[in-house]
Image (cartoon, rainbow, N blue to C red; front, side, top):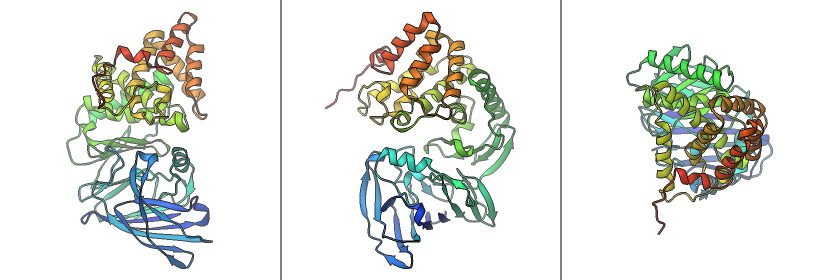
Length: 422
């Protein structure tokens, strides 16, 4: 698989050629961002129709994309397309793309290159977690840097090359800007314009690393981990497999805002593995990570206000009209993963109150080691913490899980529903 982007940041456009071998293709169709126009589809030595249909992907909450049928072929498929990215075709408020002179963002979630998937969550996650072999190149104007979720293997003038026929994930993301590079003991930081307190950053990152290592098990986070600034509103996220964090620029403005980078940093080493519907609940990544964030920020600032912040946000979520009241173990089934940032984190806070921080940290360290490489489930999680709890706490822990994981009884302490459906 070869994907070659050419980005014109001044026009807000890109052109791209994608070349696939027969073994790269797993469907009879592909999806592409609706802003793009396919110039040609060539299968073996023949050109075929570039007609498409506009479809909603249920897998991404009705995201509108173009669907193209793939002709039968024996050896090679070549797709060429072009278009503009205005930022209007992101698949949700915090997943969007743009091409402009100040900042350019290419994300797989907005289908900025062909995606060969069926319209199901399981097929999407399977497609993104199975490695393939790829060359990816990004040509940009002189003076611009391209920082990607994949490893940079070489650079020739203004063309950046990634992967070099080594195993690569299909979820490619890259940011393009006139980045300022800053190398610190905690990692390599790529900064947009704006003031930057390196001493504060070193202090916070050092504190976070030591806190996580001492409380939840040692992780050797690489000193060449990339921290890539992106404008606010684009949503921070972590690419754990390639030691890359895309982080909103505001996190660098004050110690209080460093919660964003703390959150993403803990994704690098302290989440249990989950798959399918369990993974989509976001409990075993986002609930735990939001809980870590709360603990670290409270320790950094010497005061505990994060519980109130999470509770307030959770109430806003539940009164938005978007969510039904369902227990945590069904968040994945209903695609309510957003609630794990709040409800999930508060559930872990309540668990800590029952068994104590010391015991929670000890059990969590064991749990993360046990489910580092094998997928966990909610049943595994509940049984693990019940079994490891002290005898006089086991029944209380079981009741907590009954009230929070398997029912909504525990929510009543925090949630006041004022929204009335019409």
